[in-house]
Image (tube, rainbow, N blue to C red; front, side):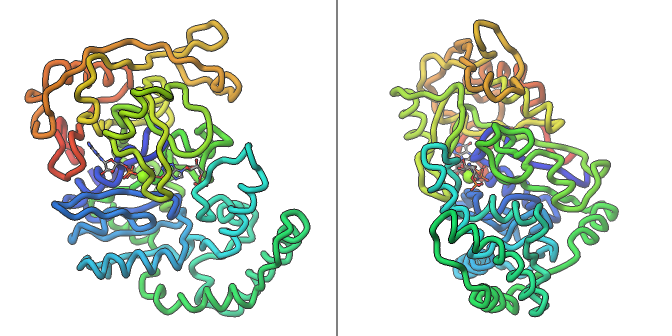
Length: 428
Ligand code: GDP
Ligand code: IMO
Ligand code: MG
């Protein structure tokens, strides 16, 4: 069982950090393959709570080597401050490896992210403002700066100048923003070089060798399936591929090497930022989910939009990721509701639709068709086995499993590592 992908099945914040940390003790490598510090992955270990943005959650497991793959975009200032923050708390970060091919988020990418959002006004995406989209845009435009460029001053200079030649025109003429001085950017980037150099490695070679040697490698996704630039609710998406294929391109590992794909699935639905969300609630139930579930963004502190579970989305996640398992999280948050509605299909322009429509217009018109399942009132946070769950909670999980198209192999009943019911092992 050498290589597993663990990814978000909805719009992010499903509990990927907790799930990764849970497996961290049993795997040799944890690899981030896309996204950057737009992610906010919470890990609770005993009475300690960690919020990781760029670093793989495996960094908290002493036996595990954390890897930042080529598909990630790296803000060097964030990288160094996250590392020193963990060091201050006694976490050993010395094993970290970073791909030299990963792209760097530069200060001007962050500027462009912010001014673009301002320019869009009402039509804005609601990005995290971390420079993610503009950095990936530079990558695809072939004007990006990579980690390896930090170690060749002359190349770095040429690349930053080339990127800014064009960008400064846009910043000044379109956004009425002052020009960015190439020299200052180069100087700032070079100031990080020495501190980063020791972490840089040929991660593709290393990970392939590790898999061939029978080591266990876990690919940890950021964001989620519906935020995928190809398969999500475009244009209200992030600029990378959190879906399973992204693990291959973002780490340099072929699809034949991946043995399991685990979708992290919240027992209800949340979303941060703009974009369609069929089961969104604007009433007291939505407020209760937000309060009980602690649904506030780890990265931007924004309130998360909340709604009932959407089985159409879960089925879609199974399809586009080839999911082998689900990890259902936050079941405990639903304790206390007498009845729990679950969206089983959509009504679009008077017709019942079972699968996620490919048309953006149709998705915007989708109205949820609900089935209501009976709730439970018993505290489930101490349950260690499926049998210990109240009958109605068991039935809720079984119903979701049937609708979603893959077995639910683990169930989260609280934020802590041990607040998990393992139904099937992920490592067989
Ligand atoms: P990620 O981005 O997918 O890693 O998820 P976030 O960390 O942004 O948000 C998930 C939140 O739910 C965090 O505060 C976790 O500590 C918490 N959490 C994860 N699993 C569970 C669970 O099963 N029950 C409860 N109550 N909280 C959970
Ligand atoms: P984790 O890994 C939830 C959302 C933003 C915005 C859109 C684009 O913690 O699940 P970006 O800054 O990426 O260009 O913003 O994507 N977004 C997330 N929402 N969880 C995340 O990460 C997110 N990362 C980005 O809110 O709507
Ligand atoms: Mg998060």
